[in-house]
Length: 207
Image (cartoon, rainbow, N blue to C red; front, side):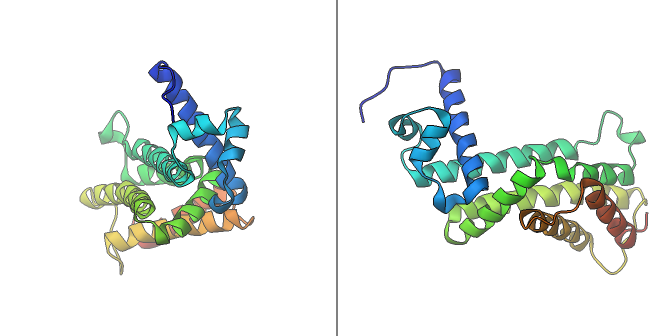
C-alpha cells in the first residue's frame, strides 16, 4: 500500500475514532461476525482503502474497537471511584449508593450491555480480548472493593456470611444480570437497578 500524504495528528485520530464508533455501532446492530470493512467504510463516508490504512484487517479493527470500548468503560469506573472533594464528609454508604445510581450511565447501558455480551463471547477464542474482559472485571471490582473496604475501616459496614470480595462479586453478578436482561429486551428501569443493588447492600453489609 502506497503511503498517504501526511495529515495533522488530530485529523488522523478523528478518522480512527469515527471508524471505531461505526464499528461499535455495527457490533451492537448485528454482532461482530457480521461486521464488514465495506459497511464500516460506507457508514463513515470513506473508502475501504482508507479504513485499511488505519486498520490493516477486519480482525484488527474489531480488536481495537473492543479495546477502545473497554478503555472507555474503565475511564467511567475510575470517575465513579473518586470520593469527591471532601472525603471526610463522604460516607461509605453514600459513595456506594452514588456508584449504584451511576451504573446505568456507564457507556450508555444498552450499547454497553450488547458490546459486553459480544466481547465475552468473542474472548473465548482470543487471548487479547480476554485481557479486555479481565480488565473490565478488575475495574468493577476495584470500584466496589475500595468503597466496601472504606466502609469497613470506618465501621459503617459489617460483614455477615460473605467476605468483602464475595460481596463485591455479588454486586458485579447482579450488574451482569441487568446487562443480559437488557440485551434480551427485558432490562429494568435505571431506578429499579439502583434500588435492587441498594437493597442487596442492605442485606450483605450492616450499614
